[in-house]
Length: 240
Image 1 (cartoon, rainbow, N blue to C red):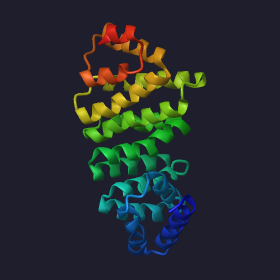
Image 2 (cartoon, one colour):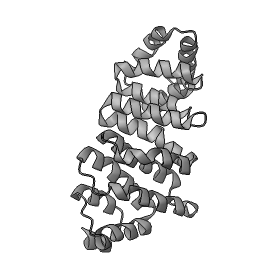
Image 3 (cartoon, rainbow, N blue to C red):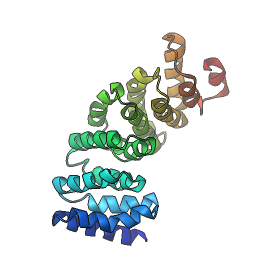
Image 4 (cartoon, helix red, strand yellow):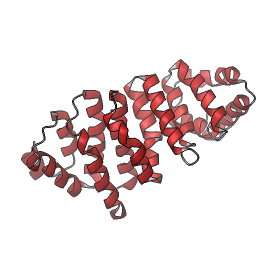
C-alpha cells in the first residue's frame, strides 16, 4: 500500500460509513490493521476517513475502538485530528474516552501526539484550557497524555524564539505534575520536559532550579533524569 492507496481506502471507508454500512467498512479496514501497516499510512487512512460529518465518523471510530488494535488507535487519532478545527472541545472529550477505552501506554501516546499535541500548536490557549483538568485526572493514562502533548508541541516549536512565551506557559502548566508518583504518568510528563529541555534548555534549567532548589520540591528520580537529559553538565550536577 502506498500513500495514494491509503487515502483512497480512507475515502471508501467514509463512504461506507455515511451509507450506514459501518460493519462492512470495518471488514475492509481489518486486514490492513492485521497486517501491521506503517503508522504513516494508517495516518493517511484516518485523515481521509475523518473528513466526514462528525456524527458519522464518531460512530465508525467507536466501532474501530471496540476491537482495540494498535493500528486502529492510529486511524482513530488521525480521524479525530480532522475534528480539531470543527469541534475542539468535542475532539478532546472523545480523545479522553478512547484513552480510557484503550487502557494501554501505546494508545495513550498515539492519541496524545495526534490530538492534544497538534491542538497545542494550532490553538495554544484553548488547548491548554481544555487540557488543564487532565493534569489532575484520576486515570494515570490521562495524566500521561499531558506530557505527550507537550512533547509534540516542543518538537514542532523546535526552539523558535517566537514560541518562548508559550514554552514558559507550558512549564508553568506542568509544575503541578512535577511530583507525580505513578511511573506510567511520569514517563509521559518526563518526556514532555525532556523535549522542552532539548529545544529550550535555558528555560528548563531555570524552571528546574526554581522547582528543586527554591521550592524544595522532590520529584521521582526518573522525572528529574528525563528533565535533565539535554541540560549542561553543570545543571545535571547541581540538580541531580
